Amino acid sequence: MWGIISSFEADIASSPDVRALWDRGQPPWVALEGRAALLHRAVLANSLALAHFVSADDVRHLEALIGTEGAPTVARIQERVLARIDDPDRSLTVRLVGRLGRLAWGSRARAGTSVISGSPELEQTCAEAALRLLLVGARAEEPPVIRSAADLGAVIDSQDLGAWRAWAAASAAAPWTGRVEEHLELVRAGGRIGETAGLEAFVGLVQRVTREDERRTVADQIRSSVDSTGLSQREFAALVGTSPSRLSTYLTGAVVPSAMMALRIERVARWVVASSASSGPDGPAGPPSRPRRPSDHELGPRARRRHARTRPDRA
Image (cartoon, rainbow, N blue to C red; front, side):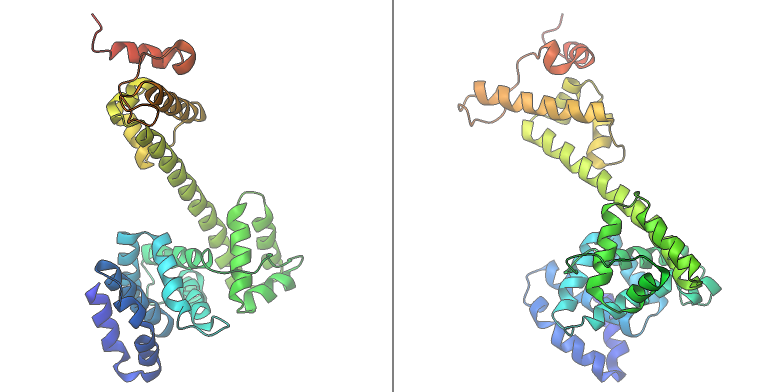
């Protein structure tokens, strides 16, 4: 991250306006402790570099930040550091979103003449970063009403960050309803080639990001259920009738369990917690203890067979 900051400081030596933004934006983050201070300063440096200069190295720096911190976290920090130095119209943030969008979907990207042409991974980085930045921060209370190509064109051209964010949030909330595809048809009808290409990519990206977020949410819920029992993964896997390695894939999000398995995990976790509360050594609020043998109704036949096979007292 020091490399990101030092590279940016070399770039702003002859840009007093950007230097002034940098000097004004740093103090709150320098005051943070440890790694957080360096991370916030690196994200601020990278955001200003992308908004004002843009080189392939700047995009690679963004890719590195996302690789270590995750795109949602980087977007939240971008919003945090830029909001303190932006004007009321959020022109600096609008500029960053616009620059990222052009790198991902703009005319130079389509013609193969942008600074990251030939690097689809970097174009994807810019696309996701633009979307993630639109999905954080304040937005208009209601998404803009879009009934025609002119309506959609006006939203795109408005430079209104609140309206952009409201539209992006509405699209992300219901990416498979067909509404976004309807907007895409409007852009096509209006003959706006650049916006058509960008919106096509945006539709696919919203759906992919939504799937990833849903997968992560399911994994977090499963981990919370398992952790609440105080059992090892091996013990819990035996109770729900699966292998420890398979349970591990659920916990990491590598595999999404079936609806039946997700329901079983939740039900078994509740049963273990309730059983431990009623019989734990410390009373109702005591830590989980080894649970009694579950009934057929509580675990189901398959899980009961697996549980029986793993009982230490089994002959």
